[in-house]
Image (cartoon, rainbow over all chains, first blue to last red; front, side, top):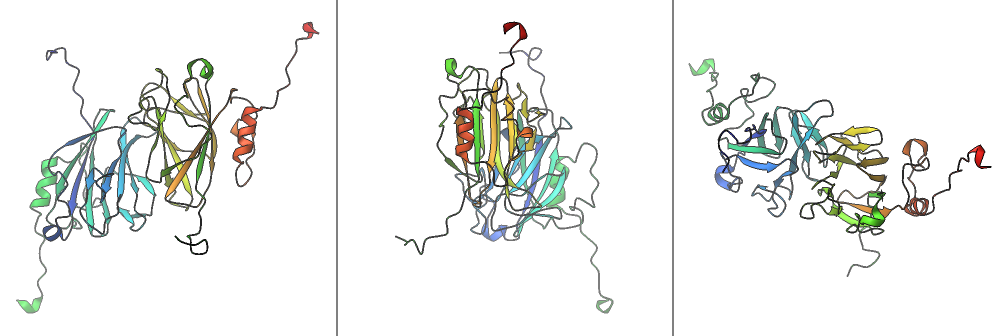
Length: 190
Length: 190
């Protein structure tokens, strides 16, 4: 066994954090096949597919309204730089995929922003890339939100990102215990 | 059985023609696992992978100098148009991939030109996209060249492409019966 001194230098791994929300998760359990709060490692050449068909998709959504493959994510490196980036592609002929405010049709793809809101149908996914060094692997880390992510504190354009991204725990605590927004009360109710 | 009148309108399928050349094919038979002169159909969501590892790659190159996955090809549609395009990505950490004059490093990708010369190591592949209507499938058609493709008549920049591409048969006949280039003879030999 290689000793601590002789072992290869440990590398950080690029991790794609994804926070999922669906308004009927409680009743329909559409996310029942997703492994939440567990880092999963994929090879750099693997395509992460999300959809209804478990024979093709690793990330399965249990919902008859979801396409066999809804969308896919894969790693690449820009010609101009060395850092790893993600590309997202809409694989659904039926449903548009939105990435922040951009609408993707079938087989349209774009480079995934470091932090963005992805949506299709009733699904909301807040994605956030935590950059790492390894070029052999990447990881995914899925979280579940009990509240809609279409709130001010989640919208990418309104929330500045610290230089090294937000920590998973902060990301998590925001979703489970969202900050209460002040409720406007009608004068007549007072 | 549906009658001819009731059958769905037949669609043309986007076909990626690839003509392969390797200087030591005769001795090494590096292409022995490729199915030449046979159209192969893939689903629009499938990634066509070329490399040494038959567990991952559908298109196997029998050569110890080739990476487990050398490069990959996949369909997409541009945001601005409806036509199908291909993206090519270098999956080799060891070897650069050239697309015409552009050099791609590991995990670099570009949109594949309609006609282009792809290279890595001693390998030359002349690629040519024949556009089709179907958005569910694409096809590949592989050909073998006995002569180097780095000759004037194959170089994309020197050969104008007719509006609807060149026919496979023309593509094929050019490779098997290349036009003889005039040989320069030294004055002293006369």
